[in-house]
Length: 358
Image (cartoon, rainbow, N blue to C red):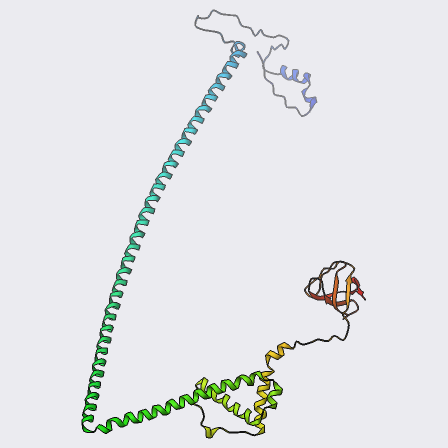
């Protein structure tokens, strides 16, 4: 038999073997020998044929254990494979559902577009028909209005023609009645009219002659130079001036030609006034263009040859390369000159980049 003792120890001295043996001797067990040891093996007794002794060493064999774990692995693989198949099936089923839904949506959208296009076409057709009907109505109204206006104009023309016809018939009847009463009075308006026509034709012929004389006199006046104009007689110049005035008045049609008694024959001052415009007309733009202006240069042209390459910093400067010739130089400053570059630009350039050419 055994005994249980609880020893409360605070340090190593409290757990010495002598102290433990002393406590054991004080226990209720009177006869306890630590040296004696009971045999754990028990005597074998007969058992039944069904009973089988459990041997842990045999039960936990390595081969059995490996078979067990292999079986577990196969089952795990099978389970994973089944789960993959299930997941793939679910995925494919979901994809089919999505595809079917997209097809349905596409068909519904196409049907909606078709219906919308049909409705839009119907609306446009209705609007077009309405516009055509409105346009036809407007055209019909305009056509009817135009017909009425044409009819009204035709009636007015008929009335006017009838009134003119009646007036002419009345005048003819009056002339016939007057001819029967007084034959001499019938020819008096004709005679007066003929005299007036002869006077008018004479005046027109006189104006034509004056116009031809003015045109003939105007050509020599333009062709003569300033000296010939001054050498002409006063009477001839004054007469030519009056003819020119008459010709201008006749050509412009502003007023009829002045009578002869209204023309003023001027003295020497008038001659000078007439001769001055003639001389100015002779010495006009033609002679001024024929004499080009001559520019005299008092100083010789300053030229220089470029020693270095220079690029313009802005639009006020010029660019040049070595050995380029710069002309028309103005020495406006000790450090900066101004001249015409080789590319045709005029601007500033540094004076120490060039040398003067003698």
